[in-house]
Image (tube, rainbow, N blue to C red; front, side, top):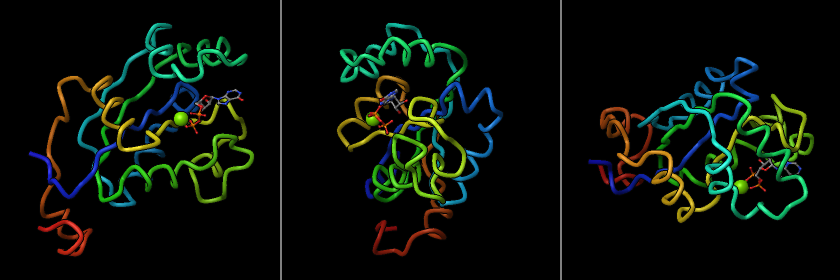
Length: 160
Ligand code: IDP
Ligand code: MG
């Protein structure tokens, strides 16, 4: 069972990151921050899945090119857990346009494009729940290691 004080979010390591050999770099940043990887899977987006995942962008002029990009190769989906993890991962990925993204963020340090910006992270706890259900229908593979939770957070932050 997952710790109720910890929140979960979905991270996607997009096809440009996989093609550029950055899977390990991105996972290392999440792990080094003290976030928990509770599930990991790789797949290739279908057109249908892109339309579902990016439904709010389906009417935008760039959508066909975005769909071509997202279906162009392997994506890695990561179930990530931590205290306030939705806000923490959004801060870690940086602005959508990687040219505007702050140094120190994944996009700010490693990307230079608005479309090919390496990484997705859910933008609210509600979208995280829906997106995790979409990409991890069987739930996380493991729960947080409680010794690691105690090493990373104060007791008052996690109740454990
Ligand atoms: P986010 O990934 O920072 O949450 P969203 O606005 O949700 O940004 O857009 C989803 C993805 O669609 C972006 O990460 C990027 O790959 C792509 N995208 C967004 N805006 C543009 C654009 O103006 N041109 C091309 N691609 C875009
Ligand atoms: Mg978004």
